[in-house]
Amino acid sequence: MYDDSRLDDPRVLERFDERLRYLAETGARVRREAGQTQSVVTEAVERLKETRPRAVIAAGPDSRLLRAVLEPHCPVPLVAWPNPRLPGWAGGLDLVVVLAPQGSDSAAASGVAEAVRRGCQVVVAAPEHSLVAQHAEGKDTTLLPTITGDGLATAVVVLELLHRLGLAPQVDSEEVAAALDDVAVSCSPFRDLALNPAKNLASAIAETTPLLWGGTVLAARAARRVAESIRTTTGRPALATVSEQLLPLLESTAPQDVFADPFADPVAEARPSLVVFDDGVDDADVRRERGEIVAAAQRAGVRTEVIASHAKGEVSTYSALMATGLYAATYLAVGEAS
Image (cartoon, rainbow, N blue to C red; front, top):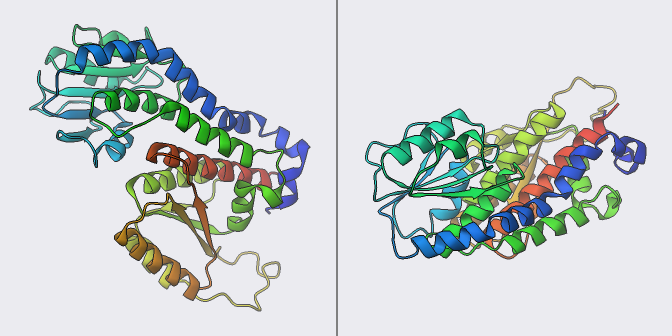
């Protein structure tokens, strides 16, 4: 059973020190990757700035994050291609971008090798001398030699390069790192429950089935990542999906019985809770969808929590929302630790 007193218990927190330390160092990893790749990015900009590709192909398993950021801004056609083989039309006029933070993905290595064979311009972010880096060797390849194995930090340095090539919105690695540092301070294990947004969120959704929703592409992606983390760290169900799928779940939830005794009926099915990821985007469709699901939650007596960020820049905001949720997922596990 969840016990929020564990969230401020040093002996319990010590058991989760490795995970909490990893979360706290996310901003530092972004800075390390930016420093590690700075000279390569500058050189690549000078070499590629006069050539605009026919299309950008974001390939590999992390391609959807690139698409989420690039799609509203990229001045050329953009394709997110998670499959190992490239689309048949890809060739020398196109730019293929691959994120491989670990560098050991054989499917990513195969896709990079195919892009090189076809004569595409290739940008690869992977550890130097890794499997993917070895398959990327070619005269039209830019290798960003990453060192942290962190997917977010890797994406940030690639997006910085694409911004300087006029293919992406402004992404500032220092702004992203600063936003992550702010989350690390506010969600620190040394900050008590009363002042800690992640601990508060964990306590609010404990012993419920969290339903997570984000109205924009990036907010929805952050919600999915956090739901995955909740499932992984606690073994409890958590669902992140679109409002059309959340509404029936909320509308079918019976109003809470104020006389119900959770201790007398411990096998009762966990009620849902609603977690809204608010990235501050003022969009009519987002406002409408949010209003519908929040109203449905209120009618059913379902508790609604909001994770909000006002960081500068959409990638910084996405990073802060996701980091806060990942801290909350960890504190859920802390509160349930035996």
